[in-house]
Length: 158
Ligand code: AMP
Image (cartoon, rainbow, N blue to C red):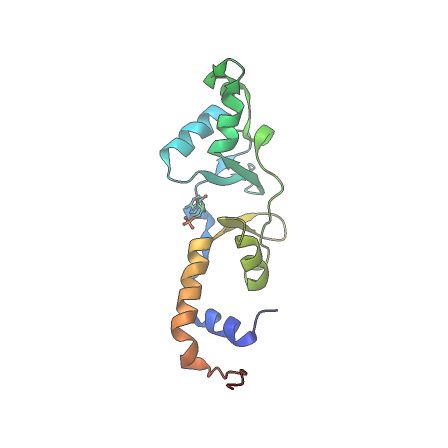
């Protein structure tokens, strides 16, 4: 459990930890890999969310997953990408966040991931929570904690 005073101070920051869906670069699960390779090469993100036609979150696709498909015993074959769809190679075992207030779970998952998809109870994609935004929150906490609480040390000085 997160110390309630810590959670309270973080909740006082005006900042929104969620980057809303309309600001997030996504691809459709039925796009072919050649298209997505071009998209990922143009934008600065190497991994982005995958959605279906009704904006449900389906998984994540990365440049590494795509280049992996180009490798053959003879070398690199980009033509293979034309015949593969995002849904054939995307990562589906993804930790998604349903409750944005659940800081404990968010922090735990962000240890291993750069970002987490934020979705509603019907799996509709609402946005992402990134390590960067959470670090800004922690920065706020470290600079503002003493405005709201006084920490007392339990250490006995000998
Ligand atoms: P950041 O913490 O801002 O570097 O973002 C971490 C990761 O989240 C990036 O490497 C991307 O995979 C993903 N990401 C962040 N912002 C966006 C965005 N606007 N659209 C798509 N993916 C994003």
